[in-house]
Length: 171
Image (cartoon, rainbow, N blue to C red; front, side):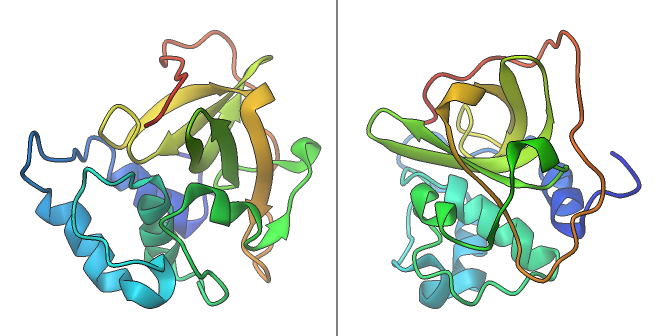
């Protein structure tokens, strides 16, 4: 963790390993995030961790980091994050940037922590049914965003060979 990490990325790192509940049970932690965020941010009543929760995770961490989420209408939908905040060019990524990815059947949203030649390294929710760091192909990235009014501190983090798994579908 770098000393310049934004508060929302610090919050995300503290949640590493948080898991959804197995079977028909639900994680009280994940449902608690939804309750705190509410309908105004999430856009739906969120009542089961079997519903994709990557967008919920991003919203929770941003809120925990003191970011104003006004303007976010359907925060539970990964692709809704592609229009939120300000656009950030790939050459100006910084830890904590919000990356939106295409996947079969939908999208995925997570926070940038670094990159290698072909993959972004991201911390996100609902990656293997838990909060984890994974590698996603740069070619799948459809948006790079940053909260409006918050200065970007730092720059791209170039990483070498990593043991982080490559994700191909975050459903």
